[in-house]
Every structure is written in structure tokens, then in C-alpha cells.
Image (cartoon, rainbow, N blue to C red):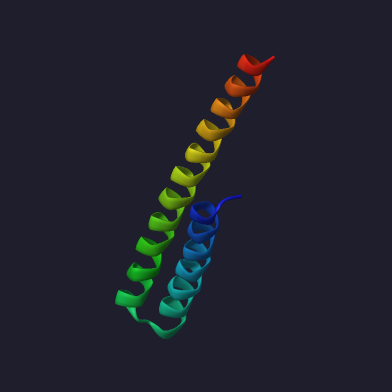
Length: 67
């Protein structure tokens, strides 16, 4: 797992906490902010995974060429 994936996971968890806190306290703005943060984290995590997969693919291609 690379940094971007890890940051996305952390952002998703922070968003869940904010959303739950917003629900508990009745603070709709905090709840919405948590929801948005979860989406941002999911996108960031997805981009990180895609970048990692592309890198792994090219590493495989480079190894195949060297053989």
C-alpha cells in the first residue's frame, strides 16, 4: 500500500467519525462534512490503488523484457 492509498483510508475513517458525531449531536453540517470526507477518501484511495496497479504492470513488463 502506498501513501496515497493510506491517506485515503485515513480520510474515510475521519469522515465516518465526523458523520457519526454529527448524527449524535444533531449537527447536520458536521454530518455532511463527514460524508463528503468519506467520498474524498474513497476517491483518493481508488486513485492510489490504480497508480499502484499501473506501476506493478510496468514492473512486470520491464522484468519480461529483461529476460
